[in-house]
Length: 545
Image (cartoon, rainbow, N blue to C red; front, side):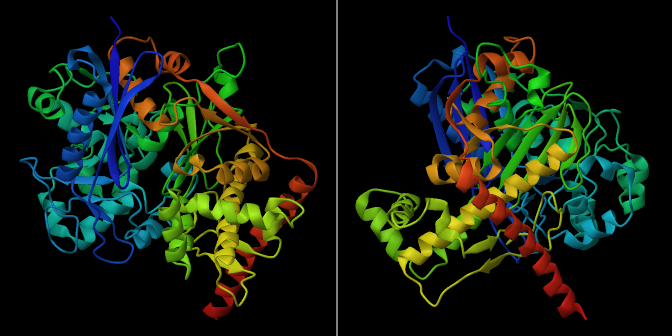
């Protein structure tokens, strides 16, 4: 009798669940929205109770859609955004919000309230920063913890447990407090290769009370992916999820990293990929933001790229993580803040298409008179740092720029700005790949999943601009598959995470980059991309005088 596995993915706007078999084929999926509060600029908050309820509803609906008996599910895996959850000693939510509402007990990954705290930490030159690309981000957890201690001291006093959201989910599912090497190494400065917290770091940044408590509030049991948490689903969680008690629950993983597990093991040809092959592959997980994951056998230090993180995605391998803080969110902002957005949306609704398909159609018409489609933006350029830069500049204070606007606001103008924005995002990916290759990687293939990868224009521009072939996974919901893989390994049905990846990952379409005039065009445009950043800094310097 076949066995099945459940993957649960919590993104910024929704919780999703997928049911998979041992070959990585998805039989059913479901999604439930989760609420987001923005009490102040740069603040983003959620509710852990709301998130758990959404997970339970999504799993029950996915099981119904898959039409399988719950008793045939052997394993369950969770992934989520790297958001900070606060609970008191009775496991009740504790506010992280200036509103004081306990319901709002999650600081979302993209929250930038802790920019000053991150700046102070970075000024200290701490050893642990070597393993986050040299610069800690306000999106990581220790700056957020420091912000809470200094700005909400009552919250700091009341909170008995601080969880990364993926670890909160496994705790809620099992009742056992286990922290993942993925989240603690990538977002909390845990030294995975030494299996310890750095007490000196926490004391020096003003969080010494965590050291005095023996790190009880942030995790004493830190385990790698592929292990099982406790004895599986608790009776209460099983009832809420619609699964039998005791189903194996895997150690959790961050959402983008789950996407890497769902793609990077796919064979390209007859042979299964080796650890050495991983150094030529990059996982691009696109959505509101984008993450860029690469694995290596030895640590690779890339300034501005997070890591190297030991065993943070695949046990025994080092992970480097690049990222862009706003990609899908930026493209949507450019579209829906434009004067013609309502017209494009109305046309999309009347024709049964997406707004992206409508704009792609406009660009196809405009390209008839161009040398090639990308050339439509020869005089229109975007610097995509509207929400700062995560990699490789590691500067959250950067801002976006647009060069080449005309005194016109037609739908065609919107289509051109949309194209230039997608190109800018792709040039950001090229910048990250170039930085990684300069330090020892040899990336030539990009495995891509996520919202943007459903857009053929997004894929074409990324292939042509990076010069890498783009591989799409057979299972487009690679993040869900990655979580299900952790459930399968936890159930004991595969010997290792790599073995499960090889069995459950498959490649589908391959997009090959253009050469000749198109490649030369993008080489020139990449020089403009770099020049715009330099010009932004020059303008900032002038205004600072």
